[in-house]
Length: 165
Image (tube, rainbow, N blue to C red; front, top):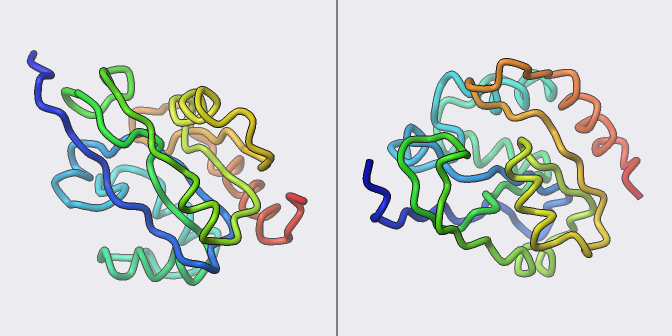
């Protein structure tokens, strides 16, 4: 399989009121086709957020953005560009990591969560000295057979109650 073509992630979703940053690893094939985060309908990300916040499952990119911004959540992937075949994090090669400073300096981020072990590993590789609480959450990917929504709910509840200070 060829991995010569460099692929690029999406721009971050955030505004100056964003308080909580969720970092994924890199968009899946389905997400890249949809041109937005967590585009694979089997991915649990949007189901977890809508369930936790007791809102309808967002069915468009605009509705997904709206949900994130209403709940003061910023969303980005830690890998800015890479060579990859397929969607598995283990296939990420020749990668560049994003610069988190523009989000951190232009929002009110108080805590960060990583959607899966790979996002967490890359976060620590570049940002281990940041003074933000960082939570390693189970990947919402359908490939993760050990997924726990409860772990997500516990962190989201902490964030909602501002227990990250």
